[in-house]
Length: 532
Image 1: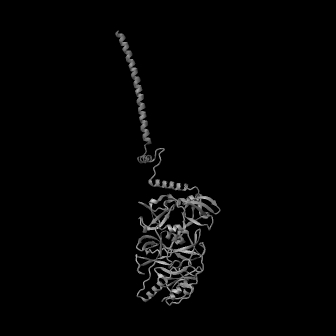
Image 2: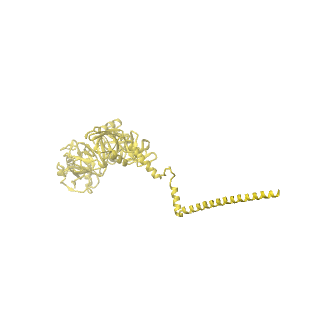
Image 3: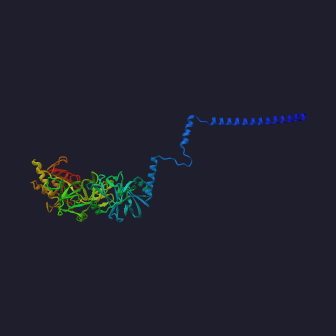
């Protein structure tokens, strides 16, 4: 038994030694493998490790790069610009067949496709419209809520129109009321009104504040406008009605010449006269007192009589206003050239002032023919380009004027007497060749008769009068001096009397009669002292 036991024991020991050797072999192989893997990892990290600065840069780049599929972040300025570009494109896309007026002033819209067709509206340069129909030389358009015809000569279409439109799309206030007052300041006050805006008219927004929108001519109530990005569009000319609708509470002068405008509601003779209210002139009634109206007319605020014999209000005033409104050229620049023909190649023979309104005889695209008080029927054309002239129906308004005081100084007193005598005949008729201060005179007949009343003899011809007396400069002219003007050939053909305060009195034309004007309403030729 012991021998057997020893034999088996030896066998088991041998087996255990073989197994241990096998396990040791496996462990050795596993250890080597682990060591190899660790070495590979260490070597790989060392090989791929960047310099410290490079690592920082790469980390920054990784942070800046958006994840795949993520939109890049835009700044507020970029977002605003993107939004504006989208709005501009939406405006362009809102027109079915876009046309844009390419003029430096304005383009007439006519009732018919004819050069002499009735003008029913106007398009300022850069204004947009839909082209409804193409005719020979004309487009039928829709803009500003109405339709009409414009000359195709001054219109851009297609890509050119879109390019010009992009330059002119701005934030504008679109009027939603039939009539909206334009105010000098953002406050509700009858004396604060400086103009009117009509429904569908568009005005560039300069600023928005609580309840108000500021435009270039004043303020509009924000309650009656829609502010948005858009093109300017056509403005309808409701002609005479537009002139009357400027007034909420209109008063009209019914006299044949002038009413006095006074600084206080009382008649103090010449002492409190601050202006003249011409025949059929219009004003806004600010207040009604016992026997007086406080009015605002033009640049004058004062008092006129409420006697119905001399002033009309209500429906009577509106009826008279519609009868009296006439087409005027209102100059917006200090001086504007007058030419013999409607083109810039023709001679500029005089200049006119923005202080006056000039009767319109004819309207052409880019030009207006006006009436000047020439006695030999010179043609006078002014350019409407560059927005220097506004053509609209208008009523006469009050004129600033104060009678000259008759001072103790004998010379000054005589001049004041001459001027005040001449002013008695304002409003009386003009008659070519006439010599009656009451029934009718021409320009030289007027000065001849006025100065003749004071013993100063003059011939009945402006050219001859211009050679008499002593020449004086505009800086040294005094009331009673005569101012002479020329026609397109440089020949003296009109004369007026200086009355002080930059004004003259003269027998102007058949339409105007004897009137008060600014002394440089057109460029004078010479000024002569006939009195001393």
